[in-house]
Length: 90
Image (cartoon, rainbow, N blue to C red; front, side):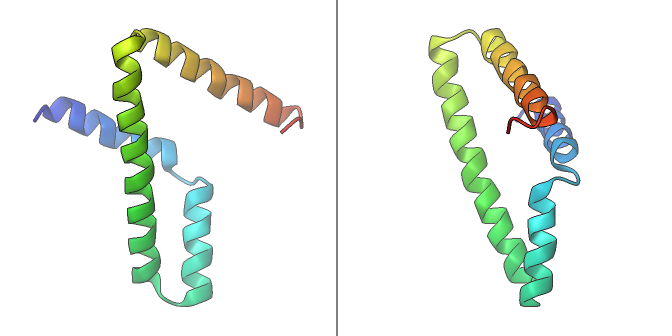
């Protein structure tokens, strides 16, 4: 296993997801249900599924498109969505 890639991925995902709406949903569900362990397990499994889909899609796209293009398109979409949200269009 490439530990450099492993820890870079952990760091990137951790800081990208820190204090986002997913955490707010988890807080709300745990408070509402009073079952934090079950909410945690549900959150972990949901994130595993979403991540698996993302990784498989990325691996498939990388066979047909240069990774640099995927990165630039992804970054551009991220910025565009941010601008649209800021402008109240989304």
